[in-house]
Amino acid sequence: MGFLNQRYQVSKEIAWTPIVWTVGAIFGLMSGLAFFRDEFLPEAYRENLRILKLIPRWNWRTWAIAGLTAIIVLILEGAYRAVTTRQERVRELEEMLIPKLEIVFDPEMKPYFEEQPIRAVPSGVLGDRRYRVGIRNKSSEVVRDAQVVLEGCTPGDMTGVHPGHALQVMGEERGSGKFNAAPGDDPTAFVDVIYEETMDGRPWGNAFGLCYAASISFAIPRASYILTLRLEGAETPCRKRFSVDKDPHIGKLTMRELVAPSAAKPSSL
Image 1: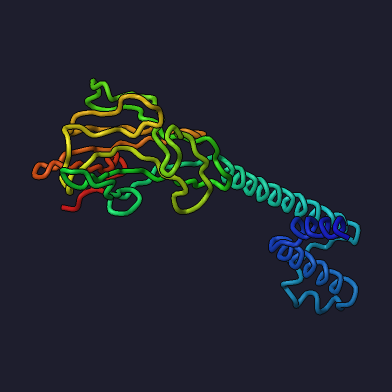
Image 2: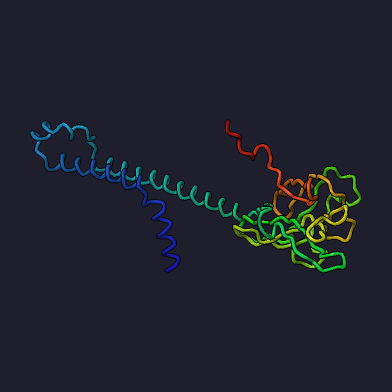
């Protein structure tokens, strides 16, 4: 039954279309009027009904051939439409299966930015300020073994700058640079980017750290930088640039996403 139902649905998709209804109705009306005119209508009435003169005077064989030709043409047209519709649907499904990852960032929300106390020490309360990026999977499948790497840092001549190294995944053991990103409208993974230590809410020390997954040197002086992050794991890597700046009054670091000129909204005059 399933096989017959499938064939019925395909046949319906090909033949049961508005164009078939329209052409079939017109052709049926014309052939019916021609048959009525030629077989039942007296000759005197035929001359008075001008509209009937517009209908060709064909014999039944010609009408049958014309009708079959119209049916074949309409079926071919319906088959073409059905095939193109299915091909478009296949392309849409294939597009959904292509891994599509993007970096998202909102410094006003957790966990993109978090500040919390670590422990009490004789000189005060040691705190941790940390910025992260989120990873959103816009495809329909889980993307496995994705990672965010530091592609570049400007200026980048410090010993703590290591382009090409993966950054630490939030909530995972130290050394975890790869993650699986589940599909969804919201980020399903987060990656640490920079952190700094504070003492009683104020910056502590003259450096901050890049959050590498590997155990390598990570400290760079407090200053302004441009970080380029590359998200790997999708068919086309995603890149985004961020500015790291030091507050001129209290010295705390801030991280902001840099919008490409083409994506920026035009200013209104």
